[in-house]
Amino acid sequence: MPNWCWNTVEFTGEEKNLNNLSKLLDKTIKMQEITGNGELLFGLEGSIDGYMFNINNVDSDEGWLNFSFESKWSPIPNDIVRIAELFNLQFTYEFEESGNGIYGKYTFEIIGDEGNLYEQSPTEEQINECRFQEEDDDEDCPSGFDYEKLEGFIESASMESCQITRVNEKAA
Image (tube, rainbow, N blue to C red; front, side, top):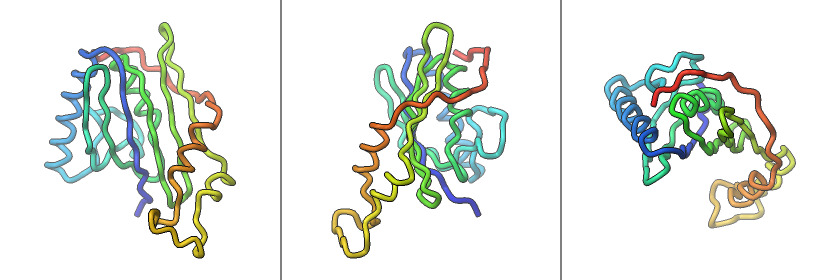
């Protein structure tokens, strides 16, 4: 049985591209409800880790669309990059897999014809600083973890460039 990674992604870009992605996201959610399984968004081919489970919290407004989902064991940034490139969108992608202490944020931006992916993650020491000791007995944080402090560590982390695979075709 896998550890589950919580993911939330916010895409930004041209309204027509966001609307096209939204339509395919709706179809994926309906398929997920029918099958009860995780789905690859609009049939993206890739490893099993690329499947999105329990897609929810879909929200959009002018210039952005966001949603949450779960993935097995770890975040799936390469699949999210593929979606962004197919629809000519940028994104911010936050992830958390607390069982193995995996937390962070990806940012994907398009400059000219190039897409660049960056990761921000806290160090192991910073993650340990966010854990409450038993004697802390914090009523506001029953999980024993200070997520506000963790978010500060992630935001202050340097943006490390990540290698990604390019997709040349556009869907929008």
